[in-house]
Length: 394
Ligand code: PLP
Image 1: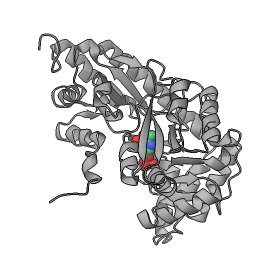
Image 2 (image 1 turned 180 degrees about the horizontal axis):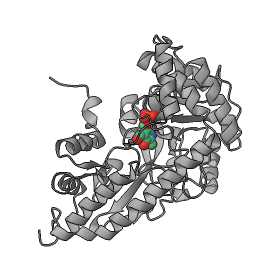
Image 3 (image 1 turned 180 degrees about the vertical axis):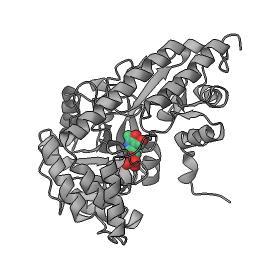
Image 4 (image 1 turned 90 degrees about the vertical axis):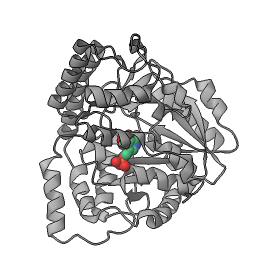
């Protein structure tokens, strides 16, 4: 039986496929970006309390008031932004739905959306499903900077939006003040909306996280997207949000209502408790992730993976050319089945798969013992002489 032309134009998420292979082969799963450690006790307790107190029916479609008020307070506290919780917030089923609903609400079929590449794999299907045409701008190794002229050349009369993901998945890039100022200038010049995916806002190891909405003239032309998943280690709760001008929020709320009706009501109540965590919660979160990064990268390097050290988020892109391997997917499949370590093939982050053929992404949002277990498997790979497919001598 045939599926729609749109659904036929993209494949199943490679990341989730790798997770399934990891389970099948009892591998250490450094593919999908979810923590393997417990969520904070206080937040879990708030969720249980909300359920016990019978907060079990639909919340207001655009979000429980308590969460919207807590979010407005957090935006003031961290970014100095004044957000009206009544008119500028739409709570969604994760940042995933936030981005999808925002694109559907803002971009007409045939209009262009600029995407920095490599990119989080969801943006591709988001564009296809909404009928938008993606225009890719390359982030260049080793520091994942972009060429301002290439970016400027990507803007034209058909450009409706640009997606900016900072801190960035998969590279760990944290967009600088200067870079965001260039993006902001171009958005103003071409009357373009910025869709900023800031889901890793609290995971910055070098530099600082800057919100594009706080740049001059950007407040009304930015949709700021984030969620509970990463900052509070609850990726399964599916609570995210958009913050935008009242006019854009009206459109996003309408789409969201028909896409998902609303995010889980009791988890929104717990979200309000999460967002009110004191500053030292975030300081500890960042420090713990920095430690994981500093533990894991040397283990990769010692095995022959060349790392591009991330400045934020919790992934590392590695270069596998030292193994002589030219097929990232075969390499990742071999790594999970033979070595017992799940990763994500680099080609899933590029619109031309060949651009990622010698890249593999690992996530390090795991307990230190999980990362050490990954290190043990890498050490066994080294000492046993196991050879990846396509490598010299295999
Ligand atoms: N945006 C980026 C850049 C991500 O890496 C991820 C998850 O890996 C998401 C969004 C998903 O966020 P959520 O769980 O809130 O849907």
